[in-house]
Structures are given as C-alpha cells and as structure tokens.
Image (cartoon, rainbow, N blue to C red; front, top):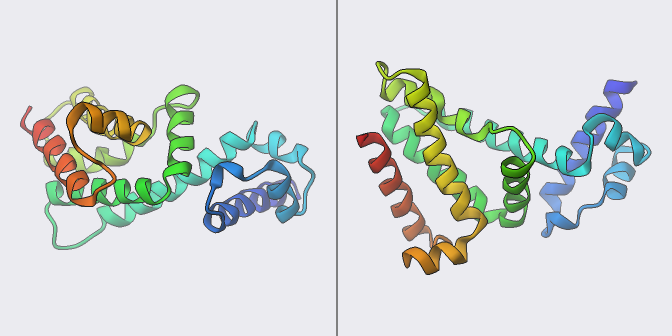
Length: 182
C-alpha cells in the first residue's frame, strides 16, 4: 500500500505536469487529490512537492537522453549534439518546469544532469580519465543550465537569443566544439 501511494503520487504529478500550461502552479493539493491520498503523504514520500517535481522532470530528461543515446546512424559526437539540442528544445518548450527543476538541482539537489552525457563522452574520449570526463560533462551542462535559467541575461551578454532555435542550436554546436577540443 505504501509503495502504491508513492507511485500514485508520482504518476499524478507527472500527469499534471503534462497537462498544465503553468507547472509552477501545480499544488500539493492537486497532486494529492489526483493520487487519492492525503497531502501529507507527498512530504512523507518525497520530502516536498519541489523534490517530487524535480524527480518527475529528471526522469523525463533521463528517458529522453537514453532514447537519444540509442539512436542508430550517428557517431558519438553527433549523438551528443542531438541529445543536447533535444534537451534544450524540451527546456524551451517547458521553460517554467525547467526553471523550477534547474533551480532545485543547482541550489538544493545533487548534481546529476551531467551524468546523462557521460556514456557519450566516454565513447568520444575512451582514453580520457574519469575526472576529466566529469569536468567536460559539467562544463557543457552547467553552461546550458545557466543559459536556460537566465535567457534574457545571456542574450544581453552574448547577443544571442536562445529562444530562437537556430541561435540555440548554434550555441550548442559551439559549446560542444569548444569542449571537445580540450
């Protein structure tokens, strides 16, 4: 019963995240009502609504990353580019959700998003030691996270509108090129 309630809460949050246009307005009460549980069980199972929402968004991103890593016909650098472009497209499409998830990860959560690209970096650099691979992953991902959190400030700084897909894709290609050269 306990794990069933946890799964229902997670599923309810996932459904609401998919349905609502302003995910920041999802309330614990909405999640609990959809899951058929008391509001207190959200905190019991997930510590907070923010932790729950971060888990849902992280799982979606991980699923997307795994799907993209499995794509046939692309070499590892092309897969990395395709993955980062797809994830950035997701971030723009779900800007509010991503801002919430990124803020949570950077300020309260553990750093896990760079780990999504580690398998590709390992393929690209089979002889590079793990610390250098982790730093490369960190540089790529945190750069994109900072841009996603503050797109207007980045635009003011770089003269690049990351809400424009062509400019955003060019930014990703340049970031990859800079990081893969080192």
